[in-house]
Every structure is written in structure tokens, then in C-alpha cells.
Image 1 (cartoon, helix red, strand yellow):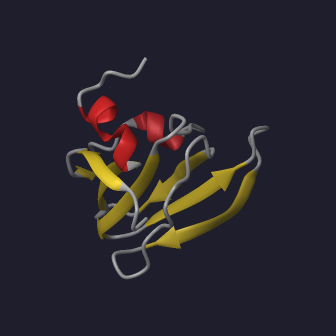
Image 2 (image 1 turned 90 degrees about the horizontal axis):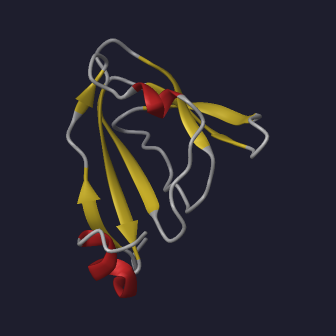
Length: 106
């Protein structure tokens, strides 16, 4: 992650405001990495196969953060505690920063 730059940070979400799309299987665009930060409480997160099989769901907390999500890697949030708060940031290579931060990509 040392050679990636952050180009977008989403608002802080909690158990009531987390978009439901994040609980369904999804992935990031080509050239986009994502980092989910758990600010409070806990959540269960899993990477998935393209066929929808969960790969070792794990519980994450502020002291046990989720790993960096690679481009096109399928994943979802399985569940979360009532006091959960989290924030999602997106990263790219320095060469792609202008296009991504200005939303010039298709």
C-alpha cells in the first residue's frame, strides 16, 4: 500500500446507515484498491470466489483491521455489531490518481 494513493473516502457509516449493497457480493473496479476501517464495534467480513463461495469469514475490530481489498476481488460484509462504525477509502496508483479523483474513467 506504500505506493498507492488515496483518492476517495466515504462518510462514516454505522449499523443503521451502512449501505445494504456492501452486504451483497461485490468487487472494486480494475485499478482500485479499497481499505475498510472499523472505527467502533466489530464486523464479519469475507472474501469470496467469483462463484459466490465465502473464503474464511473473519471478525474485524478497530485493533484487528481488515486487509487491503485488491482490485476485482469479490467480498462482502457478512454481519456487524449494533455499535459498529466504519469508513471506506479507495486507493489507486499515482499514475491513475488524476483520472480517478476527477472521475474521468468510464
